Structures are given as structure tokens and as C-alpha cells.
Length: 535
Image (cartoon, rainbow, N blue to C red; front, side, top):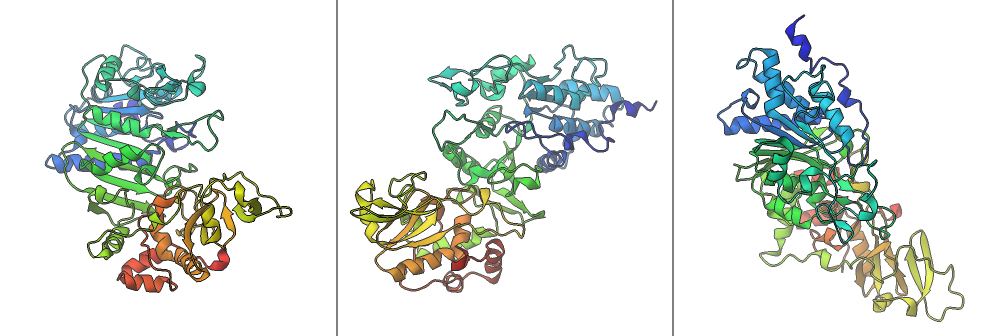
């Protein structure tokens, strides 16, 4: 038999790792194609830093996937090293054993995924079994470790990941989802415990769990809690040369509890490459992740601009090297940066007057979304027409908890949820951004279903402001800060506050801010028309 036949990591058609379904929100399996794109980025950076050297021909490097699921990263690394080390180590069995015992390591996130990863990498769920292609292991686990970890409860929450004790303090028959990498006070000590030696990893790469779900016992309106940022922070603490991870892109401009993480990432000059997919379904077939997904390459020796690339509709936008902390959020489209610079710099050195200061906070009248007004105003002393979820109703003026003075003004109400889920585009690649824009005459209020986007003395001003919101110009600027479905005042921080004594059109706005033909074309390509009749 050809000695190569015993190590056929390729040649299977189809690749089984392209066929398996995701098990849960935690186990979003990485397609081999994406894993290889990330490994290509790593190899290119290594070559640039090391005089053109081939990272896969280096037998002294250690690679760690700290959240392995299908084992795809470890498998593809093993395949590349097996090819790259052929000249230095001609004997195939010796080469494979060296790679698997000395260079490739993983930490499973569940018992099931650890078995799957071993099967992908060792061709056996038993690393020391008779069917394993690795020789020299003395344990079933090999270098792909998993042991059940418990949460550390403190006042009903895990002190490491924030999990709710009601949800995760359960029997031994269920997974705890207490991940080894982030449930420790000292990550380097934890790695020594796992692998039995003082390990220094050169490359950390993976696709960590994204979130912890919450049960119905939580308050109404609560959201799943992100945890991927904890994996990124722990991976940096390992002090590798390179770190490459897939995460949701929600951290760019939002996300629950991600403000500090976003600030740290944007300020980190070691971020070398960022590749962004606004629609997660372009990477993970059938998996809809609000705000899209992205991967980054962090280089411990890098101190400079980050090369940002956005891939949308199968097309890759022009890469641009830029500092990520130019703004308080990450502007994902490179083409938008010069547009934004021109608009924000239009104040002639003064402070930019943003529409965010005008848009009222959520719950403008402190009336919840589930409130239903009376179907008519019969018997009411001082009725107010209230815009609510699904239509209108009536409420007594005295029953409005706050901002009753606004009732007597002209108002523009804006639906508090964006038109698209998580910033996704339609089939033509465009976005509408706003769902409904309504003009509220004096004598009206709204539930938290709507934002009060503006308050005015006259109907003409309110009408002009509603037209301003409908422009592609305004909706484009809001879209730059909107990668989830929720709208609030900070989404309008890039929108200039202009006088409403006349009607604004896109043509007038493009001319006012001296946008180029290419910049206008980009906005027109991104945002679809929104006529008054569309509402």
C-alpha cells in the first residue's frame, strides 16, 4: 500500500465538515472554506514578518484552538503542516506523529464536540486507539482536552461568565457550558493543568461560543448575553504571537455589555487584519447572526493600521488600511469613511451638531410597548391620541407618566425597530433602515414602540423633518451605526442637525456636503428609496 494512503486528510468528497448541522447557539460550526481563509491570512502575515518564510514548514510552532467544535481548524493546520514539513521530515508517519503530538492542541467546548474534533484530527475519537493516525499518545484525549468544568456562583451569577444560576446549575447529565478558557483566574496556569507542561502557544485560532441564553425567568425584554469577547480577552492573555478568531460583528457598534470591549479593540494597534461579512449567511449557511460576522488577525509585533475588508453579496470591497478608533464605533464600509469625514468636518473646526441630541430617549412618555389605549375617547376628560403597537388608541392626559408638555407640540414619531433584521440587506443589496415615520399633531403621544425623533412648533417644520429622515443621506448615516434591529438616539450621532424651515432633498444634501459622484453612487447603491406613501 502507498504509505500516503494511511493519512488521507483530503480526498473525501464531500468533506464531512461541510455537511454537519449546528447543534446550538454555542456550536456554530466553522465551514472549512472560512477556516482556510483565516489560515491563509495567518500564513501571509507570518511570511511578511519572517522574510517570506513558510509558517507550515516550521516544526517548532504550537497552535491552539481554545474552543474547538468540529476540529476543522486543527485538521486544516495538521494538513498544512504535514505538507510543509515533508522536506524536513520525509517519513510520513514520523511527520504526522510530530505534528499531532507536538504542534496541534485544542480545548473542546462540550464532551460531544471534543469527540468530534478528535475524530476529525486523529481519525478516531480515541487518540491512543488502534485507528488513530497519531502514534505516541498515552491517553484517549491526546492533545484535544475536555473535562467538565463547573461555574463559580456568586449572588446567583457565575463570576467568570455571568451565567444565570437558575439556568445552568443543573444535573450532571447536562452540559454546564462553563468553558475552560474563561473559567479561571490565571489562563497560563489553566493551560499547564490541561496539557501537563508549561505551554507557550505561538498561534491561537478559533471560533468561540457567541452567547449564553437566558430563560423565561429573566425580565421581559432581556437579551442573550455575549461571551465571545471573554474568549478574545483570555486568548490575548495567553500572549501568543498571533491570534485569529471569528466573532459576531455586533461589537462594531453595539451589543449588550460590549462598550469596554469595543473601546479596547478599536484602540489596539496590534489588530492587523479585519474581514467583515455584514450578512452571516454568506459564511454560515442558514445561520442568521444579527449584525453579521467577522474575523480578525491580531499580531503581537504589529503596531499600525488595520487592513479592513468588507465582503457583501459575494463581492469583496476595496481593502483599506486605517486606524480603527477614528470614531467611537467601527465604520464597517471603507467607502463610507471619506463621506463621514466630510460631514463631521463641516462645522469649520467647531463641535459637530448631531441629531442624536434631538432624538428623545426610549420610552419618551414612559409608556411600555404592551400598553393598549382605549378604542375611543368616550367618557374621557382630556383624551390624548396615542400611537401604539398595531395602531392607535386613547389615553387620559393625566395618565401619561412624563413629558406631558410634549403632547401639545408637533412631533415626528419613528418606529423604534429598524426595517431590516440585524442590518441585513434585501436581495438587491439595499437597506431601508427606517420602518415607519409618522407626524403627530398636537394632542398625541406614543408608547415605546416609537421614538420621538423631533418636536416642533409648526406643522411645516415637522413635515420637513419627516422628509429629511426619508432621505437616503440620513438613512445611510444612521445605517453606519446600526447593526442590530434597535434604534435609539445614539444611532443618529453621524446625522447633522439642520434647520427645518425648508425641505431637504438628497440632491441638496449631496451638494451641501460636496460629495463626489462616486460617494453619491455608493449611498444610492446602499439605500433604497423611501417615499411618504411607503409608510
